[in-house]
Image 1 (cartoon, rainbow, N blue to C red):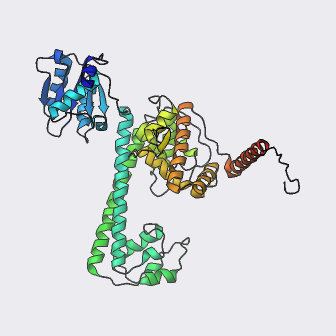
Image 2: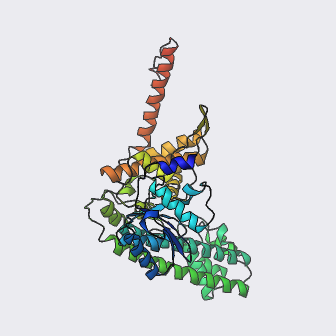
Image 3: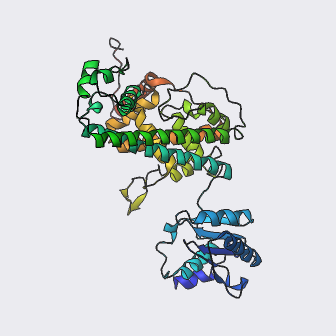
Length: 442
């Protein structure tokens, strides 16, 4: 009965088509009245995709719904979009509980039917310029993660030779660590000579480093160490190439003149090797690094994923919901069953949560806010709440062009103090009492 009622309902997109994406072929369904054979199979080659577009246009189709299956949908999406069709990228979870879907043929027909009835929602994909920057930025993140894995292999080789460098150095691949590892690979074995590479800021003494570098120099572990260092250097060169590419891509996107206030934050070792702060500010129109906790790398992740134009989101609530930072609303019988945020692999969400964690020792209003939340709840929930606050600040800066001004930890704590006093006065007034300040301690 429910299916018959749905079939009788008016069509929102009467000229819609549905495509079931596959690795070796794509099944396409158009309205039954548009063609004698409403379901056809097309290959994955470029000429097959153009033939698919020709057939859809000949059938009078103007809107196409396709599932986001792996990366197989990207060529189809780009070809159909270039041919003038409106393409809706649909999350496969929306079709998870639809009954009766037993084959690819049925899948594309269900997609076409649900799309024509307006029962699907399109995923948001930024413009081509943002997608180009995003691809290179994601490649840079992959290279950084791969570089970190080779650092772990170097540490393993050192430990196997009982060279306890990690016990005396915080970062094995810092200035001192790199100099020592490169000297070992070059052939130096004298612990005293290796300890001479100690930087003045290292807390451990030269004698402690010399003691940690007294081990057994086994040939197989030295070979692994040399191989890992070579891979580390090769990946570092690829990262520099990504930085150069991102810098070249950001030049035509910098349409705003932004005056940067202050020298900026201290750059980390994974920061881009160019003036990314100025380039990103010219692209966005505002300097997002002014927000406490947001480094240049974090801002580059945010802008490369969503771009500076947030007009696609109707309000700030829609933006935070898309990021997966809003509380859940599982309510039954007037009782809240769960208010946890949904799980999400959104890269902007992950970047904001990492930025929130960096505020634990920050001397700012946001840092004080984070520490206050940690005193009230567990740290994971506090990270999510602060990430939500950071997302709201990013939204307001990008949509309104407002500059972020940190009022400081002292101002925030005084504001909380006045709120606590006001709450106590309201409570005392409700009980028939009056609070009188102690002038001796005030």
